[in-house]
Length: 228
Image (cartoon, rainbow, N blue to C red):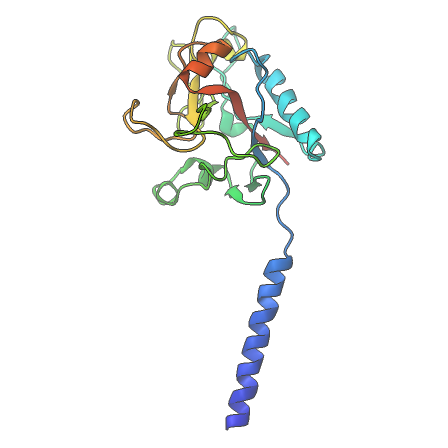
């Protein structure tokens, strides 16, 4: 009986070791999400969606991830006969991992908390996972300078605004008057906006220029997702 028990225990330990080894050897997901390490230097004028997408692609290529198709997480408002575009519809299906291999979200619904259950669970996008394509963190509340304001032009559900106000700095073509909706990459707030700590829709900017974005608490950064 003792011999049988010993053999069984040995088999259990061996199986556990094998599972642990497989987990350790499992390849991490490739880069699929990042916060831009630099903006375009013209405030919220990103050259429209095309310019923002090209910037994502360029930064990804610089770290060896240019083989994937990259899109900026940005919504546009209906204008000049063109329909609105929702950021959530531009970024593929997921899952997405950051430069360290940590999964940000499994899919679009998880990323945005589309159900009560998913909303309670929350995505894995926060201060320690919202990294640049190089794997560097974004400076947030308590650091100098605070750069946690990320351009999205989106509502919390990842969709475009449908009212008459400008939430996108003229669909990312203006560095003058206007405003763009911002999220907080560190999911932290000093309380000025009622405790909203949304990663994609916390408050609007003070203007569209680079100086206005810096004064608000950002640097003209935005999120990039791989669609394939």
